[in-house]
Length: 212
Image (tube, rainbow, N blue to C red):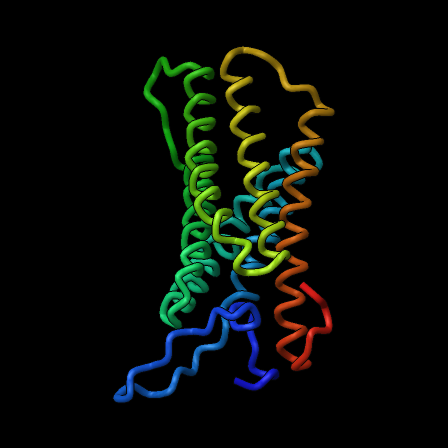
C-alpha cells in the first residue's frame, strides 16, 4: 500500500484483511475520521453540559445523529474491512443512542425515588467504564493518540460513576467539581478530534503532517 493510501489502522501495522479472490476489490475508505469526529464532537458537548456551561438539548440532538448513527456506520464499515478494533465505533455509537434514550424516553414507575434513578445512571456509567477498559487494553497497538483518547475516556466514566453514586447517596457535588469533571470530558473529546484531524490530514497529504 502506498503512503498516500495509509490510514490510522495501516500506519501502525494493522493491515486490513485482504478480500478473497472471487470478491471485488475493497472500495470503502477508512471510517476512522468519521467515527472519531462523531465521538469527539458529541463528547465535547457532553463535557460542556456536565460542567454546567450548556443545556442538555445540544448534547441529546448530537447524540442521535453524529455520536450515534454516524459512529454505527463507521463501525460497520470498519468491521467490513476486517478491523476488529472498529467494534469501538459501533459500541460508542450505541452508547450515545442509549444515553439519549435514557434521558428522553425512559419513564419510571410511580414512587421511584431520585436516589434510585441516580443509582441506575451510576450503574450505566460503570458498565461503560468496563467496556472502555476492554478497548483501553488494546489501544496502545493503535498509537499514542488513540491510547490517550481511551485513557481519558476511562477516567471520565470513572468520574461519572462516582458523581452519580454520590448524588444517589444524597450528597452534593460542588459546582467546581462538576466543572472539573466536565473539563476532563471535554479534553477526551478534543483528543478524539485531534486524532481524527491527523488521520484525515495525513491521508490527504500522503505523509505524517500531524504526528499522532
